[in-house]
Image 1 (cartoon, rainbow, N blue to C red):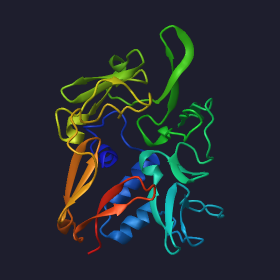
Image 2: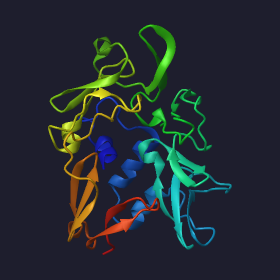
Image 3: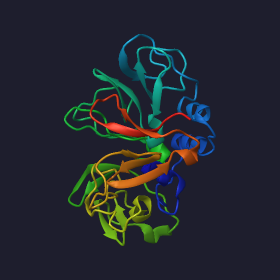
Image 4: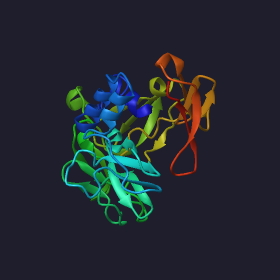
Length: 281
């Protein structure tokens, strides 16, 4: 939900406007009129069929000759048509891991501890303790470029970031710093040497929606946007009302007004949590 708001509200997110693949996907979803249209956006090259029985996750077009659904993380339950999430909506792609498929910063899978940094001019790889690559593709945000930034006393790159865009001219320049301050619910930061802001109060619907401090990870200009006093700990249903929980904030939707059935809690494939979803009409 928060990524969708950032994609559509350029006033709230002026320095990392969604571009490239992510912008195209959110634009597709913005005009979707039914479930078939949504599936067409999530699966650009058509629906994926599960290759075998059993419950598992994989990546679209895994092992196939054609590209197009390679960013899509699919979930299969006893064969049939795969369910999917398009990782490119938030600047990532699908990667195969030993335990299944994940949304990650690169499609190769695996993430050695020394692999963090800019790869090419746009892609951030962010590796922690050899785990999943948490990076993103900067071609979907802002000026569409990745760069490394030094500490005050060292020319070596201390962190990498997607370079922000601005219409303010040279006065927008600032000393790179991977932390944020909060001004009236707006997160102000300078991870890429350009003064940038993100209106957390508008995105999360509360003046207490900004938490000052280091960016975590240091390229994530959105990390300060979180309710300092959460109003929810997870999704819930109230009859026809779906209450989604994102960064401690509640986003409510009346399923009936969307032409759908009652809200129901749905188990996720990671088995750790449940999500609220409007049932079919």
